[in-house]
Image (cartoon, rainbow, N blue to C red; front, side, top):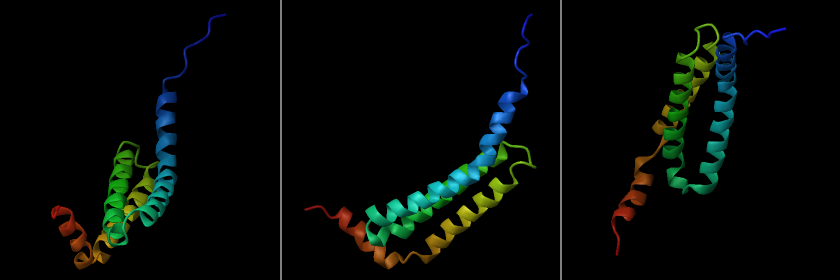
Length: 110
């Protein structure tokens, strides 16, 4: 008895499940990035670095959401918007006068 080939929609179903799980992965990655930056980055650069990371995660998630059907990517769009909003908020809270000496000191090499 011959077996029939697997249906073609399995790849699309896997892609849809990846996109449905993307908001949760992005939220966990944002939390991990925040923790790593708080522990490893100098205090005056935490907010600028966090801003860049959150906006980048938001844009990456938006690309994943753009590849999905509109009905299944709604959560991804909301989470990508929230990550981008938080990244812009972190950039607005950044005090340039505190971070500037770090970059000025990097240019002066003895």
